[in-house]
Each structure stands twice: as C-alpha cells, then as structure tokens.
Length: 435
Ligand code: NIG
Ligand code: FE
Image (cartoon, rainbow, N blue to C red; front, top):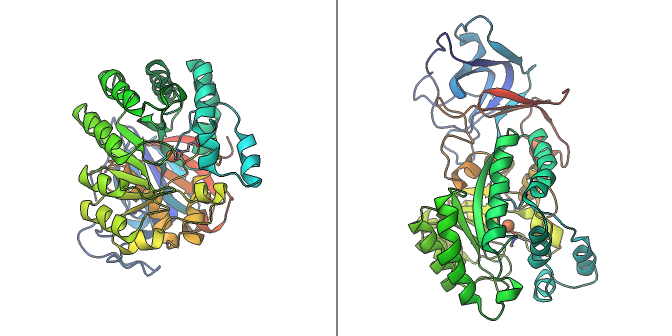
C-alpha cells in the first residue's frame, strides 16, 4: 500500500484510471494475494501486465507512494495536484533502451541505393554507412548536436517515452566521442526525458584506422575509456560485433577494460552474422545483447544461461528490407526477458516511433501484445539495469503515460497512432497534448 503522503511533500494524484498497467503482476499492493482482475490477468504468466481497474495512484516526492482501487484511496493534503484520467488507461512511462538519437547529416541516398539492390554492409564497405554520419558529426559543434536532438526528444516525450538510452559512436576520435557524450549531458539538463548515455566508441573502425583495427582498439582502451569514466559521461559501454565492425576478441578486450572503469557491457550482435557475440555477452554477463536477427538456437541458449536481456529492434530489419526478423518468439519461449527498442538512427532504422517498433515486435517477431508492452516498459528498464523504472511499485520513480483510450493494448495495435494524452516524469506533469 505504501506511505500516505505527509505534509510538505510534493504530491500528485492520478484518479479515475480505467485500467492501470502496473507491469508488476506478482504482488498485490495490499498483500501477497494474486490480483483479481476482470481482464483475466493471470499473475503466473510471464507476460501478465498486472492490470488494475478503477484505480488511483499517488506520487510523493517523485516516487510512487500508493496505488490501488480508487474507492480505497487515502486522503491527500489540500492543494495536491490532481490529474483525472477520465476512465482511460495509464501505463508506466515508456523506455527506449537502444537509440542513436544524437546524430546529424543525411543518409537518404543510402536508402535509395538499397532500393537498387546494394546491401547495408556493401555501402559500409564503400565508406558510407556509419562513417557517413561520423563525417557529419565530426564537422558539427556540440551545440549543433544538442539543437538537432532537442526536437527529437520532444517528439519522443509526446509519444510517452520518459527514459531513453542514447549511444555515442559517430565521433570515433577522443574529442568527437567526448563531444557526443557531453551533448547528451546538456540534453539531460535541458528537457525532461531521462537520458541514459552509452559509450559506443567501438561502433566501427574509422577510415583512418582501417587495416589496423587493433591500433584503434588500443586507442579506445588507453585514451578514451579512462576519460569517459573519469568524467562520468556514460553508464554503459557497447561494441558492435559484426564483419564491418569488431571481432569477438576485440569486443572482449574493450568490454573487459570498460568494466574495470565501471562501465557495464552491452553488445550489438548477430545483426547480419552470428559470430559468437551472444556467447561473449553471456561470458561477460552483459546487461543486454541487441539485434539478434541472425541468432541461432545455441546463441539463444547462451543468453538464457547468463540471463542477458535480449533487445530486439524490428524497425531496423523492416527499414533495411532484410526479410529476417529477430526470433522474438524463440527468445521469449526460451525464458529470456525480451525488450523492444527503436534503434533510431539515420542509416539502418530512421524512425523515431517506439510504439511502431512494438507493433512490429508482434507482427514480425511474434511476441504477444502483452510481451511487446512489457518490452517497452519493464524489460526495457532491466536492459538499462534500472529496477526503479518500467513498472509501478511503491518506491518506483513515478513515470506515467496517460492514454486517450481505456485499452493499453492500442499502443501496440494501432500502428503509428499516438494515444498519449499526458506524460508524468518523476511525479511531475511534463507533457500534455493540449499544451
Ligand atoms: O544498431 N548496427 C550498428 N549500429 C546501428 C546502425 C548505425 C548506422 O547505420 O548509422 C544499428 O543498426
Ligand atoms: Fe544500434
């Protein structure tokens, strides 16, 4: 049930919630009894959303302090801000756990080249792909990176995203990688979406180091990682394991060093080729393994053994027109937590819409709609190592999405529609459709 708000605390109430998605199905706020839900929400199922109907919720000092049946809502201090959900659904704030949102430049030409039959890897080998964005980012000022990212974050918030992971990886020199990460830091201070920064200096071997990839790995480990860590510019370190990028051995070197500097490992792996990145993710107990379109049964078993969160990003496969979706069903059936992310980037997934990623996670990767919703909330939080986000429990950060419909499933089923009416971040109303 939680503490009742005391005087002097900043309190927010959301009442008249037709359907509250807690993402927390195993425990009732009133005790250990399984929830009784008219939706037939079976608390033993891994995809149960933890639905509560006719509910209310109270936040105090940024955290969830109580939720339950509206009829049982405790009294709140006079002057408390009250949001009326008008009988509609309320969800935990959405989390996009894998993006490359900070970027500049134009790669529409690559889209056209692919339409004529060239592949993503061929374009990369010819000096386009990631390197095209690297050239644009190197030429851009830090302030320009910030200015171009701000409207993207505003649009993400308007779609219900309250936390977003953003990777560096378009600088690939000491100065330019630090510039990207500093841009993320100033973005954090300038708008409400919480940014989780990931250092992706190992996105590709930059042109000036081609043919000597180990020299670049050395530069990453010796010159860059210590500065990223000392300036506390990133929480995670990511490596792209692929033919066009880094080998498993190089990734091991980089991620082991990263961990010594306090950065937790995650991996881009098995996008086009299964090179053993999943086994490495398991060996290093990485927090997540992302892409996985080419993952084989033994790769899935490796992830399962180490309880690595699988992040699938179906917008990427659809955007590239590959015809090979990530094996979402097999990953979920193996007992893995499957998160769903946009992978928003200018080359392989130029789409900002996390909800559409969730739609495609169902239609392409065969998740259930409940799994897809958990993929952009609870499991996405786990992929970011955050227990205080992605589900609503007493003590969780109060990040909420108030919809314009009583049915939370419509976030996933109504492809490209935006059902988000209002957004609460850390107990404060930060977006309202009517301004
Ligand atoms: O996740 N795979 C590597 N990185 C991105 C693509 C980045 C780019 O093409 O600019 C991805 O798909
Ligand atoms: Fe990516």
